[in-house]
Image (cartoon, rainbow, N blue to C red; front, side, top):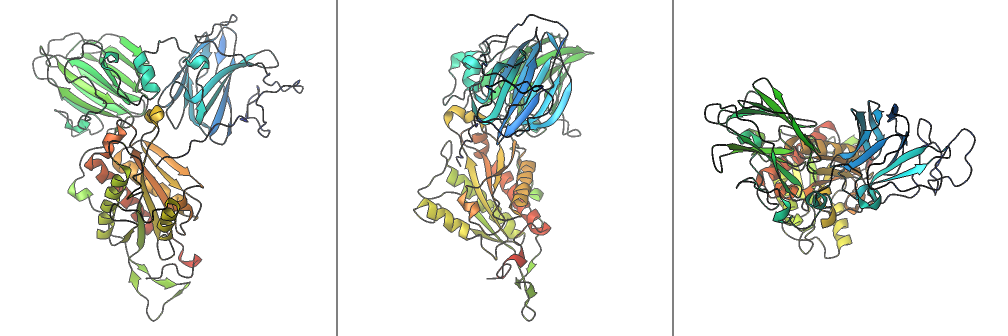
Length: 588
C-alpha cells in the first residue's frame, strides 16, 4: 500500500543556544530577524551554506563537541550543535541515521534516547556522534544540514531530520573526507535498475558477485560445521591442514540494497560468526591476520576492520542496521573457484529476514476458548450459549485493483497470507470471516469497496485485521523494508491490537521492525466499529524485501505471526467491548 509522505514544515522549532529545548510555539520563520532579547541568543537571518568539503576553522585546539539541542514539530526533528573554532566535521548518511565525524575537538561521550520524533537515539564518543533514525537516509532524502551564525557571533550546525525532509548537505554532496563512489551514490539514491557491471568490484571469482534479481543465500544455519549448541553464533572449518596464510582484505560485491563480503580462507582455517546490535564479529583461527580496515564501504557496511589475536584474528563488520541470528545477514562457505582457497561469502542487508521453514509443531496456534453470547449487559438466561469468537480478515485489494505491483502482485500476496491465517485460526476455534476469498473486489468503486470491507467490522465481531504489502517509488525504493502496523482511533483497543500483531509478526519473521503507525486517513480502519489494524508485511519495491515476499517460508511465518497476534488479543481481552453496544457479542 502506498502511503503519503509527510513533508517537513518550514516552521520547525529551533532550540536556543542555551541548554534545553525551545519552549515557545513554532514560529513561521526559524531564524530571528530582529534584535535578540537580552540574555537569549538566537540564530540570525544570514545562515551561510556549509562548504562541500570538511570545514576548517582557526582557533583553539582544546574544544569540545556535543551536547546537542533538539526540538520537534510533527514528524520532523531539528538538532543544533555548537561549532567551536578549530573544529572540522563530516556528515555521512546511513541506513540507521546520520554520522558526524569530528576532528579538532573532543567529542563529549553521551547516550540519549528519544532525542526527537525522528531521532530515536543520540550516541557520541571516540570522535563520532550519531543521530539514529527510524528510517534509512540517502544522500539527499531524510535530512538537511546547514550552518548559521548566532547573534553572539558563534557558529552552529543545524540538522533537520524527518521522513519528508530533503536536501542533504549543501550542493547535494555528503560532507565527508571519504570519497563516495558512483556505485555507492547510485545505491544511496535508489536506482530503479541494477547497477552496471562496471560499478562492481573487479576480479571477483564466480559465485561472489551479487545480482539484484538473484536468489539470496540460504539462511546462516545451513553453513557446514554449524554449532548447534550455540545458535547465536555460527562456526565452521575449511577442510585441510592449517598453513598459516595471511588473510587478504575482504572483497566487496555491491548490489542495490545488499552488500556481499567475501573472505578467502586457506585450508584448516576455522571461523565463528556472531551477530550483534552493531554488526557481525568473525573470529578466525589457522591463519595470520593484520590490522586493516575501511570506512563507508557501502550503504549496508559502515566499516570493516581486522585485528590479530592469538592463533588468528577477528574481522568486524559494522552494519547499517542491527543483525541477529535470524536477520540482517546470510552466509555460505563456497568452494574454491581456483586454487585451494575457500570463500566465506556473507551477504548484508537490513531487509534480510528468517526464511527457514516452520517445523510441524510450530504450525499450530493454541486453541482459543469460546465466548459467552450476550445481549447488552445481561446474559440470555434461558438460552445462553458459548460461541466461537468472530474475526474479520481483509486481504487488501483484489480483482481489477492489483495494489502494489513488482516482482509479484500485492493482491495475490495479501490473499495468500489471509488464507493461511484463516486455516491456522479455524483450527484454533475461531470463526474467521474473509472479506474476499478469491481474486475479486467487493465493488468497482474504490471508496465503496473500502466501506463494504469496513462494514464487516461491526458489533458481533471481535476484531478486524487488514493485510497489505507496501511499496515506494523507484527513486526511494531502498529506504523501504520491513514490517509495520497501522491503527486508527476508531476504537480504544485498536492500538493494543496493532501492538500485538506487530510484535508477533516480527518475532516470527525476524524482519526489520518499522513499528506502529497512527493514521486518521485509512478508510478501512476509520469506518470499522471494532478494534482494527492494518498490517504491512513487507515492501515489493525493495530488491531484498521483495524476495522475502516470494518465499513460501516467509509467508508462512507472516501468517503465523498474524494468527498468534489475533489469538493473544482474543484471550487477553483486546476485543470489542461487549457492554459498549447492544448487539456486541451476539451470535448471528
